[in-house]
Length: 206
Image (cartoon, rainbow, N blue to C red; front, side, top):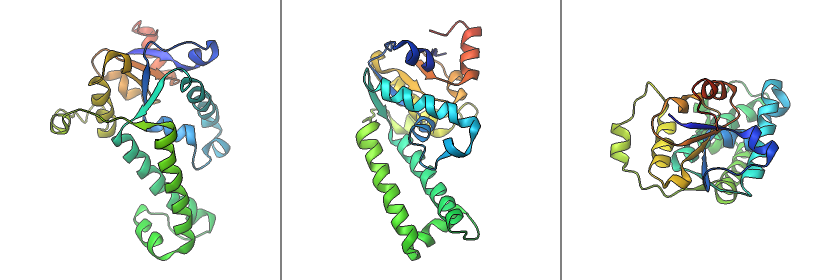
């Protein structure tokens, strides 16, 4: 079971982390970049997004920030699916299925331009903000040990990568409470109230 760190407390008090590095989950990148303007359209996410954005700006000044190939792939699928929805809503085109992506990319010059900008920003995110860590995990073992009842595959691969690292790197910044169920000694950095409440009850809050 992980130890939990309240990222708001870290931010407010300008604390140091107990590790020299941390890994970001896909949802943290989504909140940090907010590529489709959720903060302006969903009031319930506005505070979380602002906290994540402020936290990343501070944390990058005190620790090394990493992502993984599985995180990058999940983020790619997020922007692929939502760029279709965004573009179709913007121009009032009927339908918003993800299966429309290849057709739009091939036949629609306006969408091609939109997608090129999204991909340019996608590459910049992982080059400038969230470096992809060169994992040494055994992919066959990682897949064979996957238990779908606890976490999604992408989260499992992120966890396995983190647990393969030195102790000074065993920290995951996430908004996903599923990580709290995973075994082993590592840190969860979060603003998720459910995780924080569980950690308080289990005396795992740092």
